[in-house]
Length: 186
Image 1 (spheres, rainbow, N blue to C red):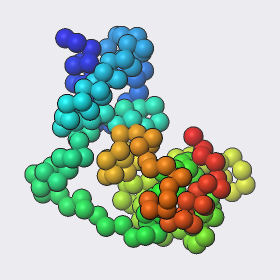
Image 2 (image 1 turned 90 degrees about the vertical axis):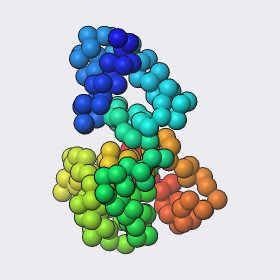
Image 3 (image 1 turned 90 degrees about the horizontal axis):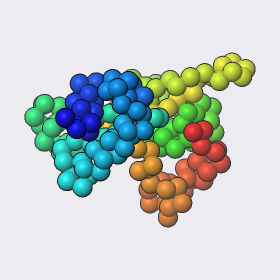
């Protein structure tokens, strides 16, 4: 059996994102070979516009459904995933996606308003998560986006986010300016 087929099987049953190192250990293959096979698998999914995709985030990989099939999958599973987000929620999600990990104070500095309620709702919806705590005074929590965020917005990697140097159509101008004030934490 080809390594890419074995990796596909492992990703199918994994459920949670896994690292190439974990896949290498499971297959007994060198990590560099696993990385090559994952790249080939990802390319095959994209070129053939298949029903699955590889989603990558923070050095981990996850097998997800193709966003183009989302409505059919949603209907089949009797789900309603067509969540409407408020403007403050979308702004907060954008800030966290571009700057993650980021503290609530940093989000509020960009938005200019209190974000605790919006952030609490996004946490409950599973779109953002507590990433870690800073070592500074008060040990503030830093937040990051989740794999559920990636799936909801049909992203396979954060590099697919639109560039900030836009004409203002993707983001309100003040949000784009605020985002540029803080360097990414990646």
